[in-house]
Length: 127
Image 1 (cartoon, rainbow, N blue to C red):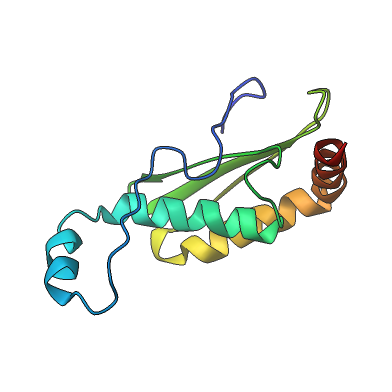
Image 2 (image 1 turned 60 degrees about the vertical axis):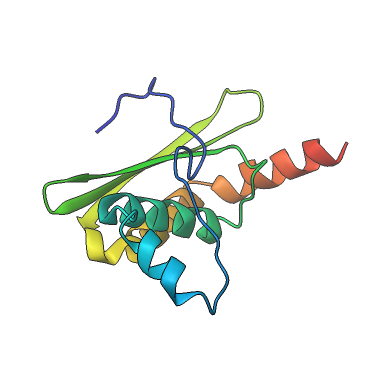
């Protein structure tokens, strides 16, 4: 478990995505070798968290997913814009359940009131 002072990056930070033509099987085969399964699961969990919170790139959401042995651990936070409120969640489970882990973290944060903080962030951005 992370301490309450730990700063978490934005969702998907450090991940690289490659886009190719759907009908280019030769390139697909080549880049398949570049895929790191642990990183893939981590990014899937973080993106499921973001989707579950209905957050975007400007939402005050931080997340760090990583593999520890056979488990995927997802630490996530939602912050108030002024930094006075910090809601946190730490969720873990089998890496193959990356989507479920992200959804569970989002549910935990929503139960703590994350929706209000995210909406307040949206309202502030609109001003």
